Amino acid sequence: MTEDNGGRSELTWYDMPELRRPLLLIAFEGLFDAASAASSALEWIRERGDSTEIAMIDPENFFNFTEARPSVRFDHSGERVIDWPVNEVYSVATDSGRDLVVLTGVEPHLRWSSFARHVVEVARRTRAEMVVTVGAFVGMVPHTRPFAVTGSAAHPELVRRLNLTPPTYQGPTGLIGVIVEQMERANIPAISLRVEVPHYVPGAPNPKATRALLRRLQQTTGVSTGYEELDSEVTEWLQRVDQAVAADDESREYVERLEEQADSNEELLPSGDDLAGELEAFLREQQGSDGDESQAG
Image (cartoon, rainbow, N blue to C red; front, side):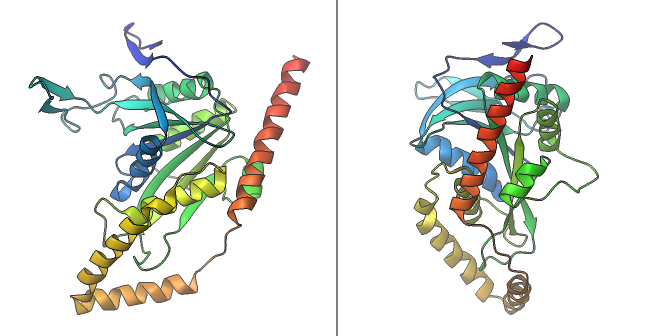
């Protein structure tokens, strides 16, 4: 249990199952979750897996409730219930050699540094070997082409092994940037994956963007995400967008220009087996070096 300065619990822990070499996956609804693609991807993983809630970060000191208002509803017994914009942590058992820890919720408005410290504690207490943040942003990709998933990491060996890019952005950041910076200080490896969604179709849901993130997660980590099960939803989504674009000459011409631009910028990525194998080698080397340092101490 973690407490704020007033002595009240902010990070509450529940019973936690035994976890096998877990990875911590993080996504927040908000500015960096266009079309809710990232939060939907982690919800997909949690709902289709054997998940257990293991922790909760109390929203009281992290939200301006005039901006993210709680909602009221009636439960099955007719009692009024208020749902707060809480951030929850789940363990997800998988069929692979490692389990997942999934943190999802709404990006808080206040005390980001304190919130990030709670997330670092989640990583430490669950013994997560690595943190993967996922997000989505609007861009110039046409809906008819594959949605690019870009990845970045500060650790130079992760950049080299996984074909990622080192961070180059300077300017206003979000909570994810704060969390990644604190993970680096805690010597917990972290990578960020972001999918680009068409700016002219920004609304949720966007199963094609969610599928792209799930596919890249599986390629990178080697943990099955079942992304193929979204194929029918993607097909239906494409048909709806195709019909809307075809009904307007200006929209159709615009998408054709985006297609030409996308085709000229196509990049090849390493295969999924290559990525997962490189990540596994990196994490095993990290575990070995941590053990050597402990023995030396």
